[in-house]
Image (cartoon, rainbow, N blue to C red; front, side, top):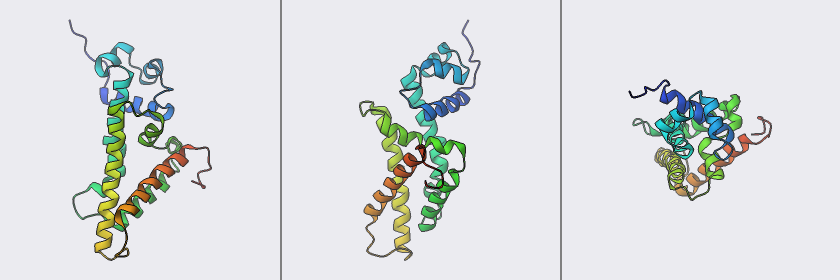
Length: 183
């Protein structure tokens, strides 16, 4: 007789995502995942595969929930984003610094720093995030240029890369022991 899942896979992904976010991939063991999720080892393996597959699914969950929410102002269909959405994005980041999980930084940025480039699936998730971030900033900057909100000779690609680098720097800085007011 087949066994039925005694847990909600989405709730489990949410829990393990937070654990990977807190501890990183390398410092999270299967025993940690079992204890944190409350799901038996065989349940995790049967549903998600091993630790690597579970981590990849957790990254997908993070991209589809946390990142989609944070990038929503750039990815909506109408109206096109502009300078106000870039300001809103960074204001949202500053407001988030008051939340206890802000000291965790960004799971994708942490992963970009921690996980070696030999895992193609993880690298693709990191690249996917940076591509979405670049597209959002570039789209908003182009619209801002059309609206006369920024100088006509503004180099969109250069400013986009500066903003992406700023996000990576801020999320890394947020994970440091630096005082919140400094970040």
